[in-house]
Length: 148
Image (cartoon, rainbow, N blue to C red):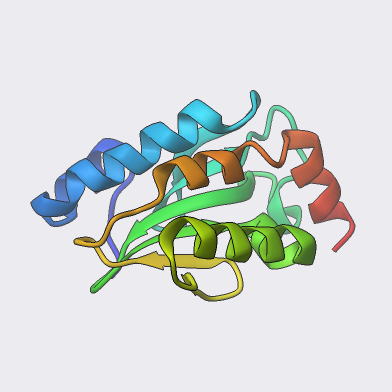
């Protein structure tokens, strides 16, 4: 689903009310565990954690007004999704996460290349997501982007 939200607060007002607590818990987990230097904003219709333009002024895809995206959270029609660009680019990180998820939850994650899909009523492994957030710094994200 696409929401026309300019701020995180607008986004939270537009998503289904029964998802707000879960999305806020995801936000808090991400913000608590992301290394310093990332910024929360809205990007591509999702809550996003980005490398700010003050740190990487070249911008994403050469767009001087678009920060480098790293992690995003989105309320979709049937799922709440966490998008982690490191999982898409770094096979070792992706393999670690899939293995750790299976150990933690007891089954394989519902994933795309960078997308982890959670059914809103199912338990989300917040502690594991916190560990995932700690695995890449702003410098790592910039290097990953520049090496693409």
